[in-house]
Image 1 (cartoon, rainbow, N blue to C red):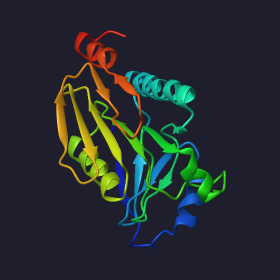
Image 2: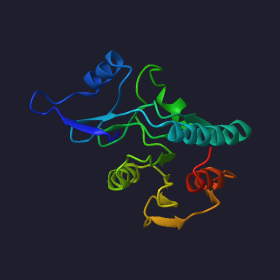
Image 3: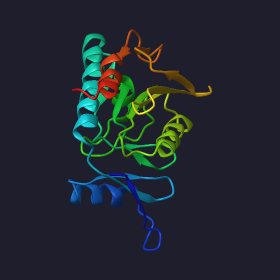
Image 4: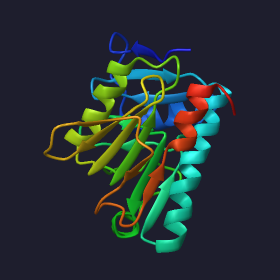
Length: 198
């Protein structure tokens, strides 16, 4: 299923507090809020995308447990970007120091631009929408982002102040200085898609 966008401006412009309460009252629905005040309803993913998301989160978590430099988040976590949008990347990472400096409410959304994000395109996702979301991350201070596109066997790498780099069917991607020593192995993700096996 494709994400649906609902414009609620005809009724009222949602504040961040109202959006948070809406999410708490509807825990079974994954919601995002755009900078324009639109609600984005994110449907559940198919089993294969869910498995890949879990694999990606696990890979980042294993690296993070070894280096102890930050915190890994899954796709259910909301982040308030500087432009006022609330986004939930498929996988995210932030340095520990940045979170400690905020002293955030454990039940609230984190008000910061992440250091690293991954978005994984599912079969129903529109590529342009995901590309716009990735650019929004970078425009709001995210340091590094990967858009994984199994359908086209590509990885789009987004970096602050640089053009998007597109890799065709890479076996692995190095996360550079943002995540020192982290190598994302993509052989399994793309091989499974091409061979339609799990």
